[in-house]
Image (cartoon, rainbow, N blue to C red):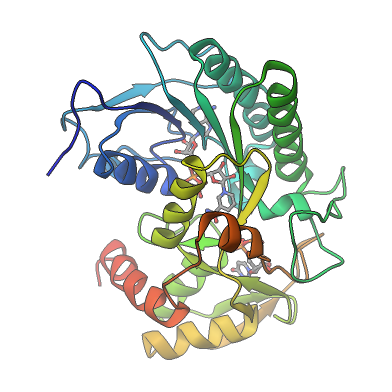
Length: 319
Ligand code: NAD
Ligand code: UDP
């Protein structure tokens, strides 16, 4: 049952038609918020939010947030999720990625300031770059090549964190910064180039699984429902500094490929391709802060999460 009424809090979600943004809009609607979803469909899709269109309290606005954002009436929260997020996407849109991290964040912060709204930035574990420590806690400053191929994304997010913090210090805006680690779930695009959709689709079609490098690099995958739950808890908190949200269960990419092969009962072989430049060798969140301050930790195991997402990929591929 929808709980929206005249006293409902109003939230703007930029990038709301994307993978994470659409799950976030859904969660906020379920929590009784009025939601304005804003997106320019650079990498997002209308079908991600089709089920929300027409529901009381949900509005969609097509807009590019690198240009001035106008919203009539009051706003209680601004959540800035707009940005290409997968390596293929940000390599295809390098300048836009920098613009949406810089100008998009600036415009979203300006709006939050004007409306006296709480601001939440979707940042990333990529601010840690190719880390020299494992796991990564929020005190680690990172190891980013400012002119490497991933820099358009990493540095845009680092700038976004810097300007968000400056708006908090100077304009006293109530800000939240979530450092999101690799997340998966329904509504990921099958061809966004990320390891999980790539492996799932290759396995389901019995095509070779493309592991980059020798597959010894690690990642830690979080199921989308857990992530959104953590982000909502952060939004409701009074914490104004960055917080890692992710699943600390770390796995090598080669073992991850093998897990997906076993799950899909696929006949695919594993083939090895060149490791992309500056590909992080390890990645695992230290979630002590989220545990202590938000009482949050992930609940969905990788085994359970992969089973859930398998059905989605089968449907997407018409299997
Ligand atoms: P996504 O590509 O599915 O979603 C991004 C959305 O932003 C898309 O709908 C796109 O159309 C929209 N967008 C891009 N530029 C825009 C602009 N100028 N104006 C309006 N809308 C614009 O990616 P996602 O995985 O859902 O990522 C969402 C956010 O979370 C991003 O900020 C990303 O950096 C962050 N993040 C995601 C992950 C992950 O594992 N998925 C990890 C770390 C951080
Ligand atoms: N990767 C891979 N094969 C693919 C796609 C990705 O081996 O077809 C690797 C990639 O090099 C990286 C890891 O899987 O080491 C995770 O990549 P993804 O793009 O999913 O996320 P990110 O590198 O941004 O963490």
